[in-house]
Amino acid sequence: MTSRKLDDFMSAHKIEEVECLIPDMAGVARGKIIPAGKFLSGMGTRGLRMPEEIFILTVTGRYVAGPATTDAASTDIYLKPDETSMRMVPWYNEPTAQVICDCHYLNDEPVDISPRHALKRVLELYAERGWKPVIAPELEFYLVARSADPDYPLEPPVGQSGRKEAGGQAYGIDAVNEFEPIVEDIYDYCEPHRIDIGTLSHESGPAQLEINFEHGDPLELADQVFLFKRAVRQAALKHNVYATFMAKPHESEPGNAMHIHQSVVDAKTGKNVFASRSGKETKLFMNHIGGLQRYMGAAMPFLAPNVNSYRRLVPYTDAPTNVHWARDNRTVSLRVPNADAPAMRVENRVPGADCNPYLAIAATLACGYLGMVEKLKPSTPVEGSAYRYAHTLPLNMEEALSKLNYTKPLKQVFGERFVAAYQEVKEYEMVQYRKVISSWEREHLLLNV
Image (tube, rainbow, N blue to C red):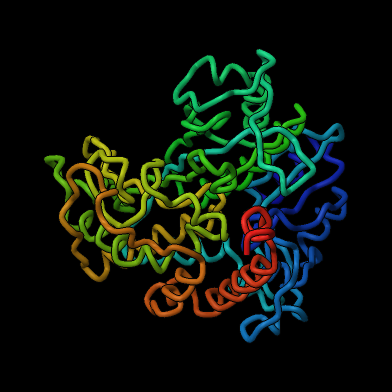
């Protein structure tokens, strides 16, 4: 969409306001709401300004100041709307548009601590080799009853039958239909968002749903996931229900994942470089898996970005615990589905639904890229359950950040300053988390120790 077409879009839809959206480190939508006229005039004059410190906000809404981010608090940046991302916002009464923005310094250089820019960096590395990655996310979420008390365990909402779902109803058609009004609004919201979703199914937890996205360009899919999360929350709120993408919202139920299917095609021919003409797995495919195995632990801060994320990664819950790979096996981190040559791919089952989609996609592609460039060989594929092997993924955020800090190739792919800023944000969040006294501590320690 050119600037002229953008102007025509605004006029045709009688847009009154524009939401300029910026995904921060946690994937939270930040930015500004601007009257339509000021938005159009600001685009051509670098008038859409924000402080760079928007990228050093924690998930708690606090700013961080550290060696890598001290200059961010005083640096002005300007927003450059990605005109291809302009969409209508369907849940407002007044005609409102939203657009995802890239951020630039006043010298026109891109802001290097922007998550969207981090994904673009990785895609540029692929392009330099003549490769083009293709991905397809699968995103899980729970519907939960509204509650104002953060100490109270979450509960499933009441469905159309007037009852709460007592347990998981994996792939249950009637279980999905319990929430048909919400599901219909999700689809209705996705249409003006141009979110290309495929199938919807009920997952293993109570009121847990999964949406599969059609495969496509990684940046476009990251944008779609970013917008989809917001749309789902709004659709649920319309029916007095919460939708949550927390990795582990229920203590005794499976967590929420964002599985990422990925392949790589030749940029000129469009041929899948993971498969030979006869349909066999190529050396590049094996190298890609080898890179995922080698660098997955260091990439965990992007795939499991919150203290809650690591509660999901436990055995026998459809979540991985190590970096093994296998063919058509859902107990491993890296699953190779049965597919013909054009669809040859690997599914990364480690990322949680709570991740920033830009960073999770960037991280999994970065690991595979390093494997292809360094010609890394994978281990022997697992036969049977991978849960019989040791838990080798990081057990917590501290361990994950330490691995990232000592993995220079991955830091170079993302950019040293970006990684340092991200680490400072996550370390601050961990400090805040450690201050909280949990209900478990009050229950078992108050009168017993």
